[in-house]
Length: 578
Ligand SMILES: Nc1nc2c(ncn2[C@@H]2O[C@H](COP(=O)(O)OP(=O)(O)O)[C@@H](O)[C@H]2O)c(=O)[nH]1
Ligand SMILES: [Mg+2]
Image (cartoon, rainbow, N blue to C red; front, side, top):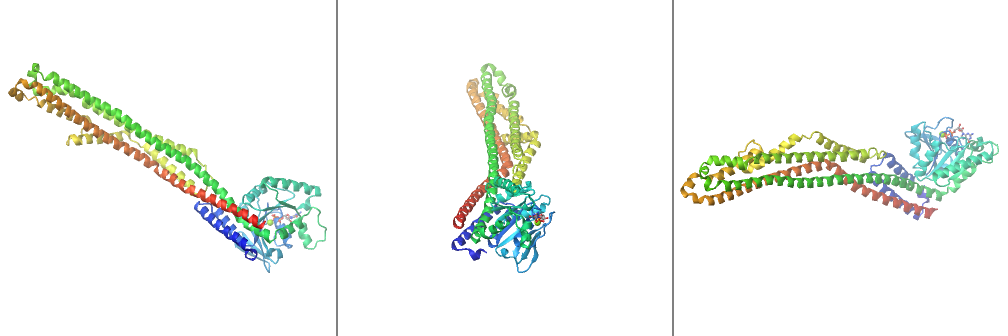
C-alpha cells in the first residue's frame, strides 16, 4: 500500500521511522522486556508494509461481527448471542471466499468486497473476561491496529470490561472511533441521544479527548444492503460511519494513521520501560546507600580497633615499665656493700629477682593479651551481626517491590541479597569465638617465641614471657659472680650496679620491642583478614549494584533518546500529513 502512495517526503519519514523503531527494538531487547512487548513493536513495524488495519473491538455480543458484515454487505462472519467468534478473523480482499488458518487462533477470511482492497478488517473474539484466551488474542491485535473501532451495545453501553479495555487501547496511542450498535432496540430518538451522551461522556473521561462516535444498527444496515425495503431509522448513523471509513479515511489520512501507529506503540513501550528502569535505579540507589553504609561501618570498625589496640598496648607497656622500675630499685637496694654476703649467693639473688622484680609480669601480660584477643574476636562477630542486619533490612524493605518487573534483574538482585544475607548469617551462627581466639593467641605466641626462643614449643605466652624475663635475671645476676667480686674487690660494686641497670634496661627494651612488634603485626593481620572477609561477603552484591547502575543509566539515556526521536517523528508526521 505504502509503496503506491508515498511521495518522496513521506518516504523519508518512513525511513526515519523505521530507523528509530529499529533502535528502540534494540534498546528494549537489551532491557530484557517481555516477549509480548517485543512482538507488539515488531508487529507494528511490520504493519507499515501492510494494508491499513482496522481492528474491531468490544465485548462479545456487542455486534462486532454483525457490524463487519454490514460494512461488507454480506454475511461473511458468524453472529450469535453467545461468544461465537472464538478466533481472530482477518478480512482481506480476494476473488473468491476462502478461510485459511494462518496461526493458532487466527484465520484470514477473503471475500470479493471492494472496500477490502484498501483496508483489512480484524474481527476479534471480544473483551469479556469469560475466556482468557479470547482476551489474549484480542489484546495481541490492539498494538497492530491503525484504527480501532470500538463497538459497544445500546442495551448495555460501556460495560466495566469495555471501559478497562478502552484504557489499554488509549495507552497504545491508538486512534479510536466509538460505535454504539443496536440502536434499533431503543424506543425513541431521545433514548438514543441519552445513550450517546452517556457513552460520549465516559469515553471522553477515559480517553482524555472526545472520540468520533456513531450510533448505528448493524442489523438494519445489513438488511437494507441485502434488499430490505424498510426505511432507515432516524437515529441510525451507519451511513455516516461508512462514509467516514471510506472517505474521511482517504489515502492521506490512512497513511497518517499508519505512520502514527508504530510511533504510538513505541512511545507506549518507552514510557512503560522508562518507568521500570527508573524504579530499578531508585532501588539501586538505596542499595548503593546500604553498601556505602556498610563500607563506612567497616572503616569505623577498623578505626575503633586501632584506637582500642593502642590503648591496650599502653597497658602492656605499663607492665613492662614497672618491671623495669622494680629491677632498677632491686639493683640499687641489692648491690651494696652492706649486702656483700648475700651477693655472694648467686642463686639466692636470682630467686629474689624472680620474686620481687619479675613477679607476675608473665601472668599480667598473658592476661592483657588474652583480653585483647577476646575483644578483637568479639568485635569481629559484632561486625558480622551489623552486616547481617543491614542486608536483612534491605531484603525486608523491598520485598516484592518490582513485582511487575518480569526480567532477570529483580531475580538476580534478590538472589544476591539472599546469598550475602546467608553468608553473613552463617558467619554469625557458626562463629566460634573460642576457636578464633585460640588461633589468634597461638599466632601471637608463635610470633613472640619465634624471635625470642626458637624452642618455645607448645607453651603459653605467659611462659614465653617468663622465660624471657628469667634470662634477663640470669644475665644480670651473672654480673655478680662472686669470683669477680673476690678478685677485683669491693670497689667495683658501684660500677657493677651501673652496668646491671643498663643491661636490665636493654633487655627489657628488647623484650618490649619484641612483644610490641609481634602483637602489632598479628593484630594488623587479624584486622586486615577480618575486614577482607567482611568485604568479600558483600562484594557480589556490591559488584552487581555498581554494574547494574552503570548499565541501567545507559539504558535510561537510550530510552530517553528513543522517546524523543519518536516524539519528533510524531510531530513531523502530523505536520506533513494532517
Ligand atoms: N437488535 C440488534 N441486534 C443485533 C445488532 N447487531 C448484532 N445483533 C445481534 O447481537 C448478537 C451478537 O452479534 P455478534 O455480531 O455475534 O456480536 P459479537 O460477539 O460482538 O461479534 C447477535 O444475535 C446479533 O444478531 C443490531 O444492530 N441490532
Ligand atoms: Mg463476533
